[in-house]
Picture 1: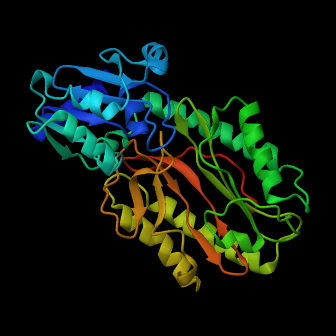
Picture 2: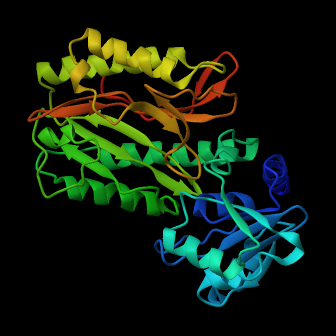
Length: 364
């Protein structure tokens, strides 16, 4: 992680800054090793101040011992007094930190105002955009090992939770079964709220499970992922109880063909939008162009966060690089009927895409 700090320092130097203030939880963990999460926009677990020669994690008194047990070499821990913006802001001018980058997507307007007031007129706060987050896009070998482990765990949970599934089981019951299996198999928890969308609910890509029972022959979209060691998995399967209807079988085959085509287009050097277009073309050719409504992308980066760079979207100019981990998840969503989505995860390589997901699919 010391190398990660040096990569951030290179950004600081390139932009003519004196320091960077990191407040996004995923980036804070990536750079410092501190695993605590925020309890909301007004309850930060810590901010990391990185300048040309030092790095300090500021956190509350209750977290100091925890932080000291986790931070990597090269990161000091200091307790703040609330409000943190005043405590940290007053220390920015020290050691000539007069131009300080901050994560504008993670800092509220109120926090920015208080930080600027405490720092004084001599300190300029400058937005970093997503520069820090993009440091995480290419995974290190140890990160790939962690991702492979949490993806395998998620595959096993899927099989255990869906084996023997019967009609009458509610969406909530199946979602709970999935998340319970995650915990029992050693996961830190769910990486995101599990989606179980049966029948017409499958037309909502991010449906929240309800008490609706699953019926024979209808599509059941399951989107799930465990978290382990700070890293997330992401898996979607569309299954059914009993025999699928002919319509379900036909739509499933379209989505399966779109995903296979998209997987075949993935390799280093291509643009995210060009990969996305491959899946869209297959779906459109089958007459479902208006039914691909899962946002504007058919895949995304995966790592500490469930959604990170790069994007496989229709406007994405992201150039894919070896070592990036991506989800590939085209889908068809039809109002009043349901949806089909299939999602796998893999690693971009120089000449292709190596799948990490191994969960079975209902149709070969």
